[in-house]
Image (cartoon, rainbow, N blue to C red; front, side, top):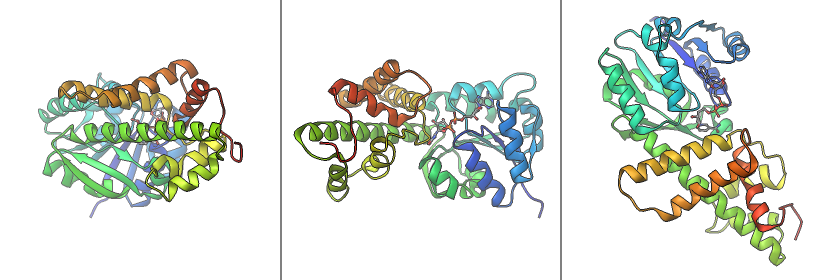
Length: 302
Ligand code: NAD
């Protein structure tokens, strides 16, 4: 059986380890990134090739993966004379693994369906560490046919693949997951700030939360590792989180759902981005809570 060729676009914090997993699973790889050095590095590490244009990448690929910052960037790589859409063959599946906007994903899927192309939105959760081990949680929206064509490639990157419904549904689910994650992070940090001013050691508080009902992903995997250590380098950008919260609130608005807690959460992350600046890690948001509280969190400090 001939090996399937996967065209992988977007080799950043997540795309880099994900593309390596795809190559390790035995697929041929053609890669592309706005950062040409990055594309060359991944091609060299995976015995793959760099495509000069999106069109050339699409012509060489059976399955295409996009792992890009936003739906707007996905559209940008698809469009134009040398864009991906110009080289797509009927029967190809596009696995849109970025965290995108559901309505925009649906529109792109409709446009591609006219050319016989399947789009499956397949955003992920688990961060850089689980991307590296191939243990991402993958949400997948789209037709049975599209999913069947892309399933083996998805399985190279994730240990849990959950079908969410029609195209766009996985992007809605992903934004709502990040809403829950963002809320859990902020409420946990505020609890640590209140507790430390009361006289509790924040590190001890994290230990208590982690064996109690206040435990969440941030208490388990972020507070000691990236906040109390003051490293703030979890590998997921603050700008990306703010984008995801905007998507979640867009879904709330489109569905007429009153969600004041979610809205406040989005506003606080956006305010943090405005106050701290762009290009930071999402765990830097703790520094915004510290500014508001007028104290810093350090292990052992009461
Ligand atoms: P990133 O910013 O680290 O990487 C994005 C990559 O896309 C970069 O290498 C960049 O050069 C490339 N790129 C940008 N514009 C391009 C273009 N026009 N053509 C080709 N390449 C282009 O982002 P990331 O952290 O890897 O996240 C990617 C997606 O995955 C985002 O949608 C994000 O919300 C989502 N996500 C990230 C994480 C995480 O922990 N970092 C976890 C889950 C989901």
